[in-house]
Length: 112
Length: 111
Image 1 (cartoon, rainbow over the protein chains, first blue to last red):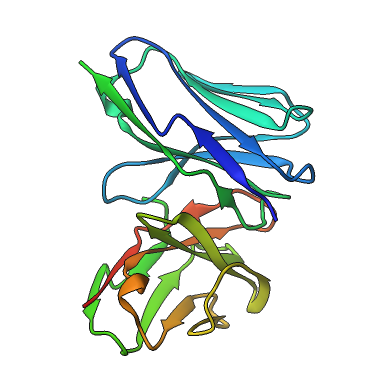
Image 2 (image 1 turned 135 degrees about the vertical axis):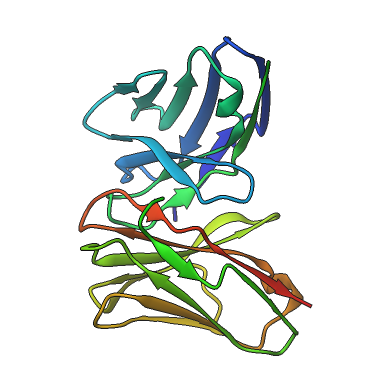
């Protein structure tokens, strides 16, 4: 089955700096890659996703890149703000409506 | 608010007991997914239902079962509970072939 590895497990940045979180996956049949943000005690919230037919997708301060050949994808957050502090999870699945396999999560701390 | 509702928010029970967690998907969403989130195992897929039928099964224990009713709400039944079953249980829903939206979760504590 699919295996998703996520790095780093914790990331501390200064407000205004950029943050990058990386994930690798094992199943070459995976073609849908969402990112979720989870604040303490809250539900995972979808923040951006990418499908395998594109290499990059942007939404304001966040972007995701996908390298299907290398089987890795990354989340980029620019101009970080304290409210970006949370745990971020990457995931992979064969299709958007299929089960998600999650990475282990990255705790992002943005220091004011 | 994702539009997915889950009850109860918190549940405290003893080992050996049985509990039922309930999920109502977003209006119009046919798929319901159950995930378990524990400190040591992260977010793990348990089971998916689509329009009342089981669609996919993950690492769900035999002591756990689920169903989706004609009104599309779903229930996850956990029986013979063990201390290790203590976790957050999330339900998610999606329209056919689309992204998944998570509910607020049920925090289960087994004592």
